[in-house]
Length: 205
Image (cartoon, rainbow, N blue to C red; front, top):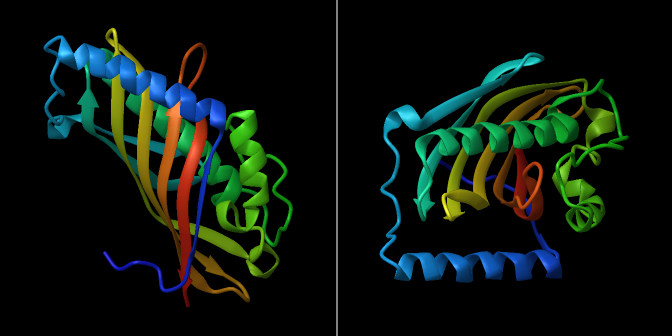
């Protein structure tokens, strides 16, 4: 698949989140040393689709790899919950709302405070803010997510979500935009939260 013709890239992690990720990695290493090898890649039936009612294009979500032990039912829960969180971000930042628009006040649902603070400085990349005043409508073309899951004690603790979002816009900015990259998520108590990102964005007329 061709890469966007033009684009920007941003990386952001909070120090506390990096420390948490390292703790999870070390914990996982201990589990693997105790004869817990990576689980084999899932079969094709471990692919889910999440559809937002306002946009009929489905989000195709699959699990690429699970490190550690994670029961099938919990895999399905992770796949569903992470897909819903990413869909909420896409809706808030790119696909939803009434265009033309330049205001994206709630663009980062499910982000930690530290990640949201950094993301707000990257709104030109992580939302449609810069071109929103020249857009009349947004139509999604592709929504895909691939998950790598780290599990400790049969509980999912960390996820790397590789994603691709492609959408077409009409108006003075008539183009096809591709947003791709990775989101880094964790869950200790409560729902999954995004604590870091590595994102590229580009458009073709």
